[in-house]
Length: 235
Length: 144
Image 1 (cartoon, chains in turn purple, cyan):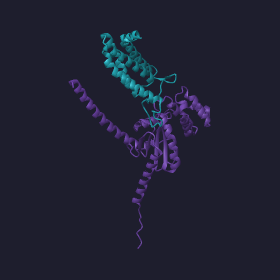
Image 2 (tube, rainbow over the protein chains, first blue to last red):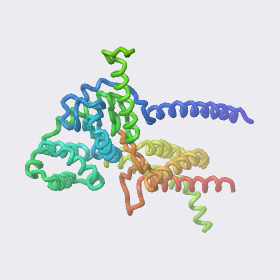
Image 3 (tube, helix red, strand yellow):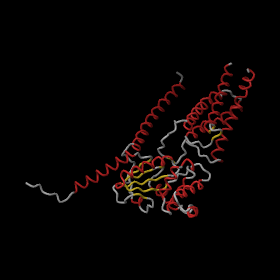
Image 4 (tube, one colour):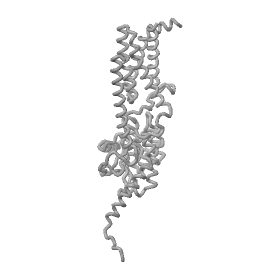
């Protein structure tokens, strides 16, 4: 074997080792992100839920779910029925908060968020969100998405003139949601914060249930260990 | 037929250069003028295509057919990546259940298409494959 061949073979061997080590660490990282229960970090969620205009449920509920969503994102669309099922099954245990996080790669996402905000001023935020998710493939690449949004506004019974005049006004709530997301490390959609723990990507119903049940256990456990006034056992 | 083959091997570097040049300018047109943001796989293909312009320029100046040995591995790998991306775009290989949307463009996204099947990775594959064939012809013409 020539010296050049030996040289290259040596480098090839080192490269393989580096790739194996790298793959090992990457695998560990994605495991902790995607398997149930292991979130990346816990944050103080008070800022995430204060002044939240789009919520479902009782703010005092045991489990707080904050979702940062992009209305043009297919993943957020597939997460939507899961959230619905969650609220249906665990309504009284869950306080759900919606936050806008329109990605710049989705050219109509911000406009869609504005459409939802305009619908909100007439009291139909979540109805518009449903419409937008359901017909995502119709408007996502459209050069005139607003036309689609006006159709949806009509379909959910909004005052069209008011909708049209207001749709461009509601930039601030979207910007502030986006800034909030950035402060808390949101980089993709959907990103869920469940009792302050961040989960990137679609969270399956089973995973939600596991988290809810374990947080209920924690609350129950805290209650029994702290219970005062234990009655003395009678002889 | 033999004449055509000889003509091809005589002008292989010229043709390959033109293809690499056109591909480079074309990709920059898509990203800088049409504002289509390149995804990760597009960057890998660019890394292989852009240097070919430089390689072929030097080869033309030096009249050096040995460039085939340097260009062929690059164009072969480029063709492979382009094929993979095309499959991502066109077949169920792409994720049918989306998990999350990132800040960067997904490589399965079809940003441009002609006649329903000519997408940017298709064009990239055509360019890399043609260059590879020309380089093989060059190598074979040296062997004679």
